[in-house]
Length: 552
Image (cartoon, rainbow, N blue to C red):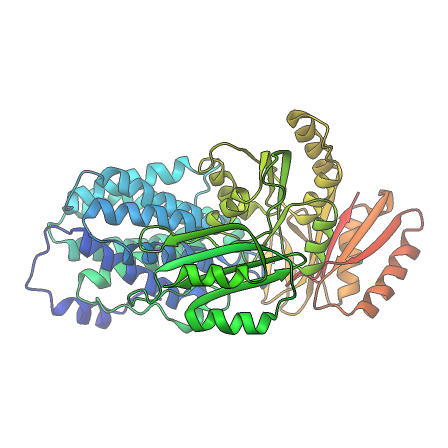
């Protein structure tokens, strides 16, 4: 919500007699943290600004994840000169970025920092030039820029900033904030899908809220609270503004040779540190711990077996990495490695069963960050590593990883759904060349039609299709094609749109909200309706979507 006149006046009145001609690194630090706070306070609102009326909006969470990591890195700085501050923000927003919105936001700050790399302070004129650089880098990072998004906010502000040439940063930022909110309200003019859905663009509004935070900070509202309740639903990591209690991030993998009392071990680690991750999986024990006695932590693990790998990082100097997977054979590098992004225990088991090395938890409502994908890549000893993002919103984060990894070839396979990812993986041949496998993946992806069935969370109109809250809606290859009063009707309507009668096989994956007995009823009905098609049903366990269906 835009500030009322009363709020604007009350924020600005105490500083009205002062003129802020320059801002430095410390000013920018407070602005970024205040911008994070304002964004966090509106995360739920931004998440619900979804073009489709489904309960999986995550733009606010993705942007907040990037900013929270930037704030964490700012807290670790020894000095807050402008170049150091902007470098920390650039690195933090990139590593914390989730989804396209998070990655684009990181590129905005990257471009801003490129202009400021040799500057100690910024005038309003220089700030305007930095906005131009931010806009250019952000647009260049997107293969097909779309107007009516946060990119439009950046473009218009960078073009018009010179018109607001005022010496005082407070007045300058106020004009930027007001204009940003106006652009947000105009986003439906650019995109018909926003007009039809009756919403403004979520990323654009998120960026406007960040600018509001900058305005508030420059006008004296410098107290920051990043522990905000409504930032929780999407599992946003909250960060502490206090000094680090434990200095060392300690990790180890032990090959177990004797029985482990897991609860006793857990109790011991909790007594010497925090942020414990303890996994006893098959023949391996893994732990991650923040502690001041890393040697003691590793020695305790060695009581149960032989050390495979360990790592100790000073958290003041380096971002910690959580161990995600037991390593394969680190003595011999294999030809190919596989990383898949998926949500649901059923899907994870399916992908593991066909040879995927790492399944990174994520999907439509919980996009993994660039850092998480990089950690997965780092843990696989292979010459070439394929990443199957299985969601268009994860493509940019996946593509960013290959620029951060050395000594391995990282290839993103452009899968938009888990159904496409599964089809591509079934076509994989370990003996084939890279190009041969990429051709196999492409052909497999083109051969499958992906269906998603969920429930509408609000009234909406998408193209000519009227949707009422509570109805079951069907998507075919990302396009909303059906809206029905019952779940079965929506399934059959969408299957008909996919010409299922002409298919060879229909494979259904039911979500965690669907009872298995109900799946058997609909399975029999599908077999009756399509007698010449093989129909299979599996547990996917995905959130939000009652059924994910592939038609081949």
